[in-house]
Image 1 (spheres, rainbow, N blue to C red):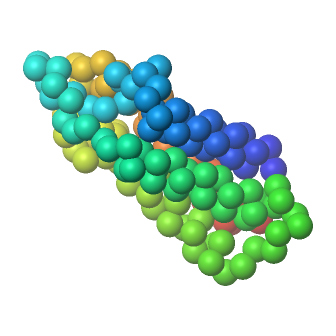
Image 2: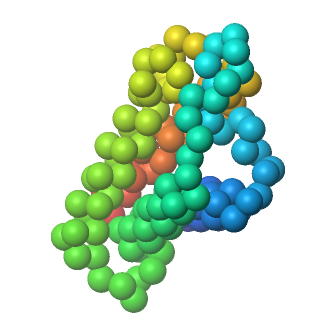
Image 3: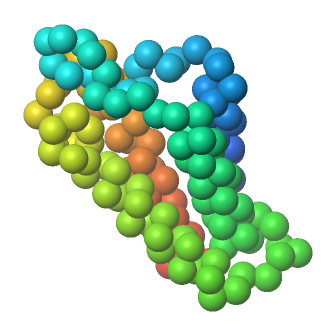
Length: 140
């Protein structure tokens, strides 16, 4: 339960941060988008709607983990909860592996500010969440 609780807290924090960014917040926003090597130009500019969708999905992931990890014992775990958790295992696992260029364990562009944060924060967080969802599925 402790592992699930920590991960639910992290998911809610990251989801809240996305809501903050969607409504114009700037804190941390310069290091969360990959930049092209050398030029420093961002590889993409997420829209407000896309940022809110990511926030919503993170909140849904937190809810799924809360139910599967029995942090919300009053809510029954239906089969779709388990399937949703498996989707989260694969999504966070794939994010940790990355795109083989800018993000993940096997990125080639490593000298940008984003790449440093990705190496020491974003990818380990995704590995942790992948592990947490898997652990909760197996042992709950």
